[in-house]
Image 1 (tube, rainbow, N blue to C red):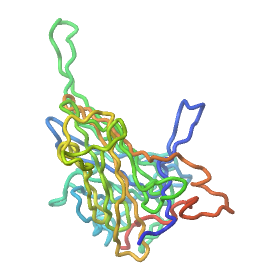
Image 2: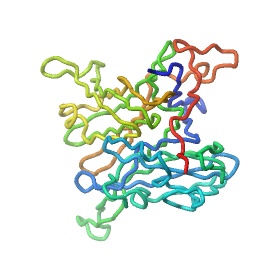
Image 3: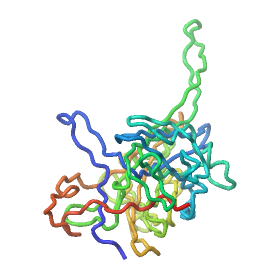
Length: 367
C-alpha cells in the first residue's frame, strides 16, 4: 500500500539574477550518486569515476558510503552490517577505511580517486559499475545502532575516459602529433528529498516520474539510461520507460501499440541500459528531439512503513570520440514554494500541498 503524503521536492531551481544564473538544492545528509564506474566501455572507452565530497555544514563531518553494484540485482544485504561499507574510522566498524572521510572541516573537500576500483572491485563477482549512497554526519557521532547527528554535504562524480588527441605539428606542415587527455562529464548527487515519489501526485503536480531529454541515438551517438531504486531496503519497484517523439506523440510498433518497457527493480538495485533505444525499445535512428519518460507503475514492500523513491540519469555519448554528455532528470512540474515549504498553518493533503518527505529511505546499519 502506498504511503500518502510522501513528498519528493525534486531538483529545485531558483533564479539568482534576472534569469542569468541558476542553482540547485543539492546539500543533504543522505545523497544518491547515481553512477560510478571502473569499466571498459564501447570501442576504446575506459570509464572511470572520481567522487568529490564537500562539507557545507558548520562543524567537522564524517562520511559513510555504500555501493550498489549494477545489474538489477537485490543489494539490500549491504544493510545487514557494515562489512561492505566505506568510512573514515576503524572504530565505527566499516569494512573499508579511508581516513580522509573523517573530520572533514567546514568548506573542506575530499576527492575519492576511482573508488570503485579502490574498494568494491576487489570483491569477487561484483560488477564494476553502479551507484554510491553517501551519508554525512557530525564527526564521531555514529552510534552502534546506526543513529547519527545529521549534517550536510554536496557530492559530485566526474565520469571520464582516456582519449588520444592529434594536433598539427607546428614545425611540420601536414603532420600530426599525439596528445593524451580525457573526455568526461559531471553527475551531481541526488539528495534524498529529491527522489521521484509515487505518492506525490495531486493538484500541485505529479512527481512520480522523471523526464530525460535529448534522447537521440543513431550511428553517431548512443544513449544510455540508468535507474536507481532508492527506496527502503524492503521495497521493490516497477517502472515504465516510454519514449516520446518531438511532436509529443508516443512511438508505436508495427502493430500500432505504444512502445514502452516495464522494468522491475528489487531493493537497492541499480540498472543501466546501454544503447537503450536499439537494444531495449527496438528503435533505430532516433532523433535527438526525443524524450524518455520514466515513472512508477507500482511497488511492493515487506516494510510496515515503506519509503519509496527512485532516481534516473541519461548519458549521450559520441561514438566517434567517446565524449559523453550527462542528461539530468527533470520533473514535469515547476518548483512551488508554497507546496514544498508550506507555512506552519498550511493544510497538507494528498490532493493539495505536500509536506516535505519526512523519512529517509535508508540508514547506516547497526554494527
